[in-house]
Image (cartoon, rainbow, N blue to C red; front, top):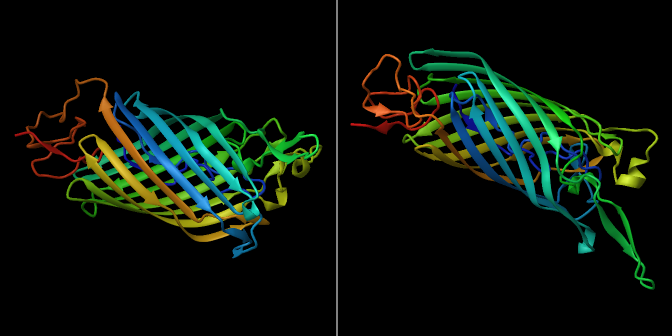
Length: 369
């Protein structure tokens, strides 16, 4: 019934999404920005898109820097979401992304391993189990259960050697870090909580996500992913939003079919999989009526990996979201109150006699008289 999203890199996934090893790659959350989402109002639709950029030439062994195994990694990822409020408590979204480019540059610029294409598609229903409003205060608790379907390639190859005499080219499977998807069908478990109204104009959010990874056709099972996020958000001048997020993530070690030599065949070092990370993520947003633009950056505070892996170094996201109603018969107030300022989304109970934001969806109120 209500909706507010804090987008952060994030992810998602995404993208690098806290790779499971510089040689093995892999993924954590497939949701780019790992957006923090409640539910929409009934008959409300959201269209959202974000562009995420990642670059790193920083390698870690444990929690300390180590010698590089290749020169650098970069990616540009376009992530899109379409969400619809089926009832006042149930929202379903269809999400997915396209890699404009994923590039691993070898040492001394000896060559590049590149890919582009579709990543994963996610079907993501969410349901409000608590939605309580008391005067200016609002509490919301949402659960979600998602299903990830791989669309992109996970077994693409690249040239490793060209015979100078015959011109014959020899190929090997590209490392998972460069593949658009890890190729498995995963299940997402999601929990979201929001409190707003006290202190005034301050919102507190928290969410957690657990992703149960499946096996892909190559005999690989990337480690299960767990994330916990805490957000504090403040609105200024009715349209400018500033959010500070603390993110903690844990990726388990990869498993594999013992009958398959994943290192020789697929460039996967299983001993360099699994990681822990804590990050601080500032975000700035601007809203005009039903449209919001935002930008954010991830600042890693702590990273610890198993084996040797590439770490998070530069990660930025820019995005845009637009919300509207497919039906125009919603009234702003159940009691028929005549407000001076009304919610542009026509949220029930979203009006006021003074400037501010809607207590339901967080949009800036419009003056109507």
